[in-house]
Length: 302
Image 1 (cartoon, helix red, strand yellow):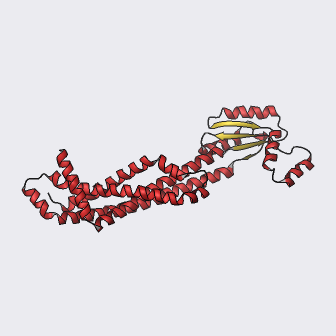
Image 2: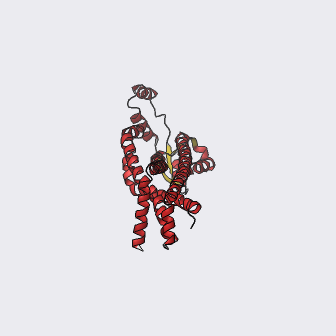
Image 3: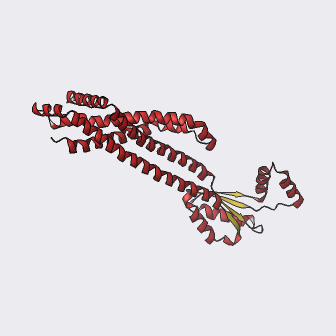
């Protein structure tokens, strides 16, 4: 069994080498397909990391009227903490709000001077609410509209951050669709080219196939070299794709860091290396096997 397997693998490798430019063309198209899939994976992974960072900063700020006593605000805080969609609730007093405002406006002396001229704290106490998931902020907003303390609320602020996350989610979804469409197109082209390459190999070796039939070689023994030929196309394309992906990321690392300082794209590549490489090998081997199977079924009549 192992002797047969070794001979058929060797036969597939010899076919791959003999096909020359046809092998180069087949590997190149499959390379584009695998490179597109890997790039799509890294883009989505990067976007997910950015989303997680943004979601950590998203919150709902509920500002209470100046006339509302602290006891009422603390009661509202307790009610909100019992709502299952809410992760944390932080109470910020008027004095704390003023300190935060002064810290954020340290580089703007005109604003600080205006505060001094007013003579009193014009800011409101508020609660900072963070949901368990960014998709739950709409439910939190609806809860606030019908809460028992709704008449004590001056205004609620969270829409800006949510809109940014929604736009990023929409962009990621579009990137997935476009990337999958391109990968699908290259997959079809790969199937056609590899199938034709194997067909030509079958035609070139037609006399050898006839001889093998005459000496009693099994159908499996005759077919396996062509199957392994297709798998070799996928494996070679996978290795080259990983190298090309690394070179591309290395060259674009500084540009990506300027765009997204919080993301180290090479770290993502290495931390997910085996997932990316394994997926490429599986997809490449599958496409190669499928292409060879189509060619054998159509052109190798056994």
